[in-house]
Length: 327
Image (cartoon, rainbow, N blue to C red; front, side, top):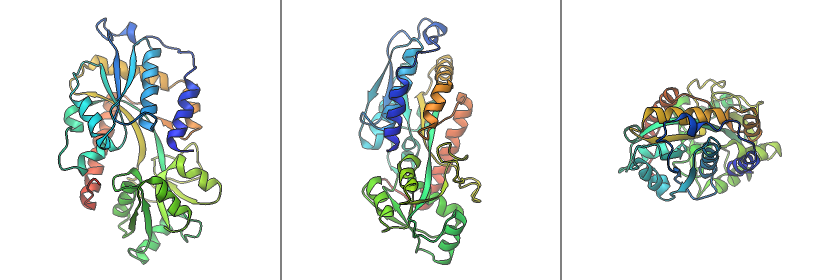
């Protein structure tokens, strides 16, 4: 089951829940929301971003608003991001984004948007950890052992990559830079063939989304060395974090965040933030998502803004040092 399948399972299961709070329309000024809220997903229907956008839209509907998902796929998300950036800052256009929203900014020479200049963070919805996996025949069983091997044999430890700008590829670059090791990246045309290469023993290791690789780990076809999130995963608590392995600043996830165009009124940002946080904090929501490896992260707009700032700083350094450009 992929991360998209997991999100779809949870979204379907929660779609029938009776809403506990129907207060957005009642607690905001009469002028908002007086029309449909568009939750933009810069992807085609069916992907993880689209599914999370539908969860957000449903929760806004449960709160008394009218919200729909608007899919704007193409250009590695640039079409949808530009559309949202240029929308009126009136609270009727929100953007559900994932990691590429930040990392794209450093991999393209010409960008139609700027995360800091054009957007304001609204709410951190949640994340799925990534996981460092290897073929069972790969000698290291821990991150420290992998680092030691890579230092002993520079350039000989191989990591499979689905694409140069994927979360797994960038995580591999971060590992390389933080651990000061020389590892070789083997490119594949997509995550699935990259994972198949590791499962087949053609490449030693890769960093992949937890929910995609975990079934292979559980079946004994891969072994897991560590998860990349700051804390252990509720879905796979036996595996240590990269931080526990000694890489103190290693915190990478497949995150989902809600943004609004810059200059969107603060009272609207605060009320949308409060409603989504309230909905996602429900025990049934937390439990359902936790069973699929998705960690909900409640946050104020201010704390969320600090996280985005840290993401921009981190990936700017990683991409620049690695010399990565969009495919």
